[in-house]
Length: 342
Image: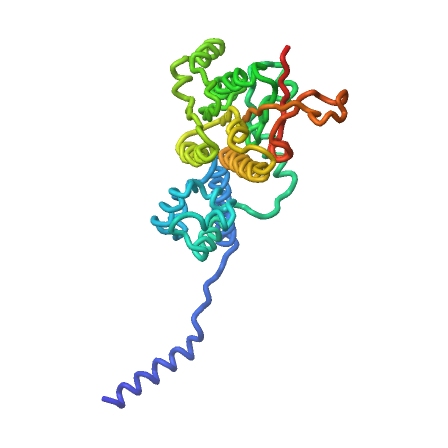
């Protein structure tokens, strides 16, 4: 039997040597062209998906589950005020470590995942110019003011309005709460408004009157305005955390803070507390700027004034009043409007 098996093996080897090695698969030009078409189609589909993702706005933090982030960590981030991947990528490590249940090592891992989704490096000026041209401009309801602002209030930035009492700051904010709900072709933002009131000057009746001017349903306009009364500076800052949660679920076009400095002015007294006040105010304005950039909303803050040249120097030079908040407020806002009594 062994002899028979050995003979069969020798015959198989001999036949293989006579036939030679098996022929290699032939790659035709048609196959190469078909493969290239498939690759191009895949790249185009991926680019379209990225464009759709950018048009959809901020990325919900829940999307990180597909990147391996656990549901427990996502829940902790949401409880800490982080509702989007952009917010996770842009916050500092110190801020994220303050969230309960998130360690420093976990922060590094979470941010590494966020940075792989959100672009954090350099880009070209052409891309920035295209993004600037695509920004929404919300009309103010006054053609002259829109002309001064080159189209209206710019989304993604902070606009400051300061002036004396009873010069129209709050009325201007009420008008913006209505115009931001208009369609884009009519100069609106097609979104809701969020109103933080620190002085108790909000009047829904005025919103109804302004809505009738723009041929809008007054009841629908009131339903699209989220209102909150801030009672102290800490509460004022906490309202921004709640605002981020609301904006992650619905489309908002405008945030109004009327006024941003009233509570700071009453709670912090004298030069001894000036430094603490400015630090707290700077953090509040920084949080507003993050919301503006993250959700693409226009932010409007009103500001009070103080008499200028109180020391007597330069009594006859410059304006008689100036906005409070100092350089912190001036550097944090993109546009400043000074309202005067006519």
